[in-house]
Length: 198
Image 1: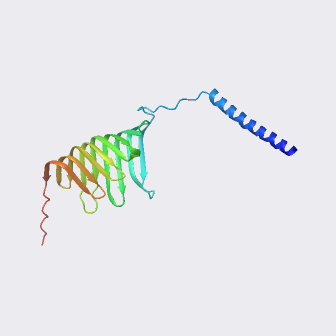
Image 2 (image 1 turned 90 degrees about the horizontal axis):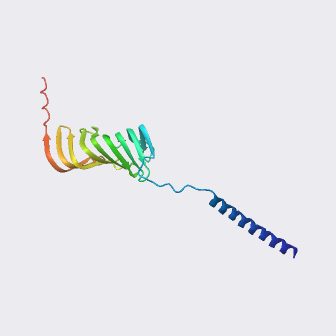
Image 3 (image 1 turned 135 degrees about the vertical axis):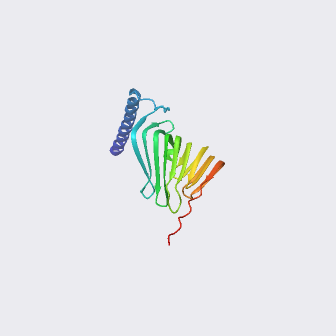
């Protein structure tokens, strides 16, 4: 009988302790003023000047380097805008590309970069291929896929060839360049080799 009475008292004390703790926590929560959830707006929440960012491939080797004059970040869509962007994409199995522009917008965690204003795309000469230069006022990059494309007018210089067109897509993995509408093509023949001296 004594043991049952002790057990009942222990249970009552435990329930009282739990109820008292819950009441104290609830009272404290209601008594303390909490900030409302942060409202995400398209206003700059951070910025950096004269920055350099490096992304690595799955093996931990640097694959993409981005630098610029100023980068500002917007929290509502997690995008960034960059002034004077220069991006270098280098991997062991493909030619290095260097792209620059006056302005750029990065989103999708840097997987998409929309560049505008004096966009200059350079694929370095490699593996017996001439250097490739593409100039346009707008270009979109997909650094992880090594793609560059635009639906705007573009000038392409490939070796001695010059192509002007509208709409371009270049895949640096397959080295394929496609142009939607060609408006002008100039192919400058190479110089004939000088005759050998006897």
